[in-house]
Image 1 (cartoon, rainbow, N blue to C red):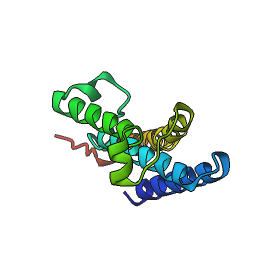
Image 2 (tube, rainbow, N blue to C red):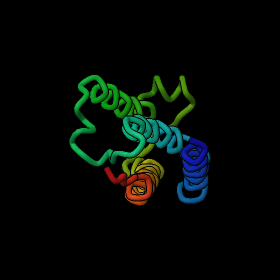
Image 3 (cartoon, rainbow, N blue to C red):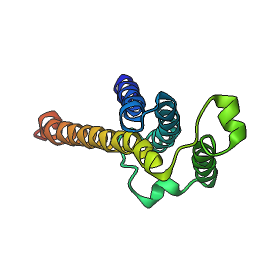
Length: 142
């Protein structure tokens, strides 16, 4: 979990820098980072359903409640930067489609990194069970 937190932190801080240098506004960067954080929460929710199984299957969307929660989170992630009420309440600014595209980058990177980690975990488990099996088998003569 430390790795996940570190990846999210690096991604969000990068989005603030993108806002400042690419769009000329720290406030835009903070709004992009806020949206990105909400999207990372969706990725984390999907990935935490299993320690080793990939989330890139249709089985990921078997839970109706989880699907509604993810949809709600996504809608709120968009509205936070589009509705004046949320802008005033949370101190965000409106972002455009290009800026929203930037907000997707940390979430997609998190998805890829998490899948690579799960792939490595599956390989380690496979190697352990494959190599431990014959060594642990005892043959007795009757």
